[in-house]
Image (cartoon, rainbow, N blue to C red; front, side, top):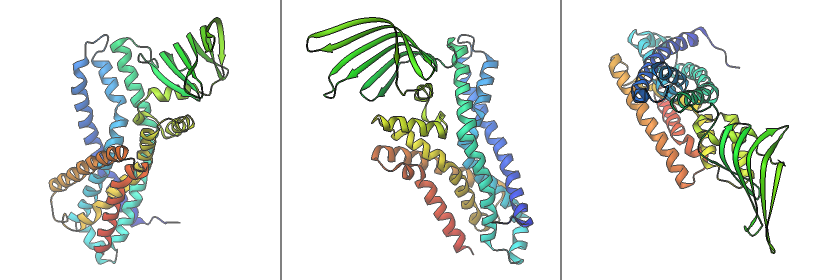
Length: 357
């Protein structure tokens, strides 16, 4: 069990305070840029200034989740930099406090901020992104929340489904099911005008079924038909969302569905590992700042620390995106594609911290 001493709380308090200020400043800038960039949609349908404001506010959790590694880095640079500027770090070192001890307190602060980032990425950001999109589409195009205009393709076993319209998660229309034989020939085609999810199964209505055999095609029309498939409304909802708008639990459910049906799940597995790596990225960024504050940035001003933090944060963000895309194209293991920059940054930070002792 790690005990948090008064010194640890003092260091963590400085980091938390400056991190909160950095979060407020960067999220305000990000929100303002989003508002300006989206203002061109004002006037389309019933989409006005107040609807745009609601859209931007719902996007704040997403912006915080994206920016939090940079925010944490800036907060650590500013928090420890303030202590160094007031010679408090010098006093701590003179009292026998090692740089490793200061790094440990920083990591404990990073653990808290990383947990916040996990909550943002797994719950608040997906919820906010979905609500923002639904709000914009509802007032711009009059679309019912939860509906989607573009078709959705699904597969379960030897059946390939085409859903022409998704009204809600449990109400769909214009469904075509293609049943394949083992030799991939077409065995049957079933078209239903609409279907509802009731009591654990899909109830299709106004059904037209065409079976293909050696004697030719046989057509039958049915008022209703029950489909006992395993595609639930949750899977239907998840496939309509972008991978970065799905929670960890949703990503795990979706990858299980895709693997069970021999479908490519690389994009979703990568996003799952990126979400799981997010807290460790925050901690690595914060630990990376410690040797610099005690070394080359010790006697610099606030502006230089901010510039250094922004440059490192932007460089890391670009490296993270490039590694993720390169790994997906090259077929790397998802954990390597999602975590290589974090592993390298954490290793460099630990190496510099040990050298600075």
